[in-house]
Length: 403
Image (cartoon, rainbow, N blue to C red):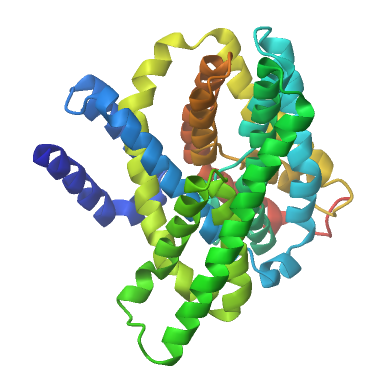
């Protein structure tokens, strides 16, 4: 155990001191951590994959809960006002379009999936990963409106996909068990309702207590750094224990926290973002140890083709259509459509589907894993080059934007 701890700690330390250099290269942190996971796991055998599988589920759960809370808190009104048109179109038109197109493609390419399972797969892979998009969102070469548009869209996208995925899973289980769609949707509505109530209630009480203690000078600079992390995990854990959705609890709790703390939000959630980044990279390390070795030799041409289409046509076409009439030029629409990386949310959704035991769960998980691995590579390697490309295109534009 201590040898494993030493390996992980040394690797994280080494990465932390070169992270700035890595961010300017064609390799991303998740790519490096997944590759390292493959090397120290399947290749060298230092970490047994079977023993690490349960750890991956727990770590991925907590990491997604923290990101949902932080992203919802950071999606403030100021950012929405500055670039409302881009994220609103991408979320209200592009997201449903991506789910629908992914659903149709899954039905055509995988005849073993039921209608609801195809819908589950379409929704799972419509969720984008805000953390994987950070190399673009934080790159100053990218125009501000595009960075903020992607930031708001990716921050809210995965939270909006949670109830959709859960609803389709419930409909599939209801059809299998003969419960009927009405009862199935009632059960998922209860799960979502419990999650929302827990998230809002815990955050309201927690923020109130924080304010009360803050006014009395009881909050120290050291301990305030874990306030948001503890609150996010509290929302998630309590909701799950009450048979609600911990993801919805984290998302709604984060939205309320951002509303209640207003101008202080960024300062309060900033330490949590750093902790979330660390947890995410460790999740990718475990992903490399546990998943990649089990996937690569089972990938068929249909699975690979679906993954490629999911990252291109299925994402880019609905986003392109959603931005029609927005005034954005063609290169901006293509740029916004391309940077929809798949990552942590899709992995957690796949684990949920496997736990529920859907008939097509193994195929769904395989497709998701293949898509995520491909996304890690192509989005990671194109982030900085395309950021420079879009900056050049914008600088060279002489007039206004196309309709």
